[in-house]
Amino acid sequence: MNLKNIAQKEAFINEYKGNLFEYLVGLQLARENDVESLFHKGLQTQLKKRLVDYEKMLRREDRDLLKELPILAEHASIAIGSKVQEKINDLRVVGKIAGGVNEIGLKEADLLVKTTTNRLIPISIKLCKANSYINTKSGGVKSFFKTYFYEEFGKDALKEQDSLNKFLGEEFVKMGAEMYRLANIVYNPKKPFGPEWESAGLSHLPGQLPKELKGPLFHFYHQVISKIHHVFLTFEQKKPGGFKNALYPLAGFSVQNILQVHCHHKEDEEGKRYQLEKCEVFDQELNEKEELVILDVISGGASFELVWGPLKLQVRVKPMNVFTVPGLKINCSVKYGVQKNVH
Image (cartoon, rainbow, N blue to C red; front, side, top):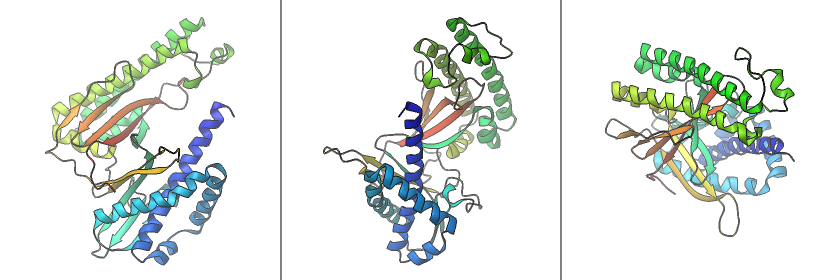
């Protein structure tokens, strides 16, 4: 199996396990609160069929994972219960797996629970390897400031977006020129990475670039993330409170009362995979009292971090599948240094 097929297989397994895990956590919560029949009644027929298919695929591809998922889900359910501290009388699967059920602005939510006091609590569920960052947002660089900072910074956000887009185009042209020079190909800045690129036996995928051509690409990433870092510093200095408000969605808190559930697994000393490391539940406890520090861009790298109380928020630029188009995506991910509600 080649690297491309291996990557595709891993991507599919990640999707299957994530969707099944959301369902299993919901099922466990329903059982613990004596509303299992109501939970099943709320599942669409198409969703049930998809879950059965996912289970079959995981049984074929990764039996160890399928065996451990219910155990991990049980721990996640216990963690949620200790955080909610109320009896749940209804819950629904509302994430992307539900196929359009999430129509009431629940954003990152995978489950929606209703308590006996009529509280509606959206829950985001993440299953990940121990000590890893957890993805919270991913979007195109050409609309990043407009999407996430316009509400707080208005015209300044639009101005910075225009400036970033212009800078992105200029740096892309420079990157292409340097790559063509190193590859001894005639460069046309108006039509970079045309048929002559493939004719020279070169790929459009960053992972398949020869080592000598990766330098200009990494420099391109570094220049763009440095520009974004500068704008972050500018916004934070101009309007600290508004800047923090803009960060909430990037940290996975687009909905104010959402709970984030992070279930971390590891391989134990005996080589058993998917063993529980910890389950954590977080709410939007980040507030004006918490200190926010924007760290420097990693030397020569494509990311930087913000430290905000117990939270680390990483901002990274990555290619949109291929690197030979003047577009990048921005990935945001989080890691918590202060553990709360650990089970």
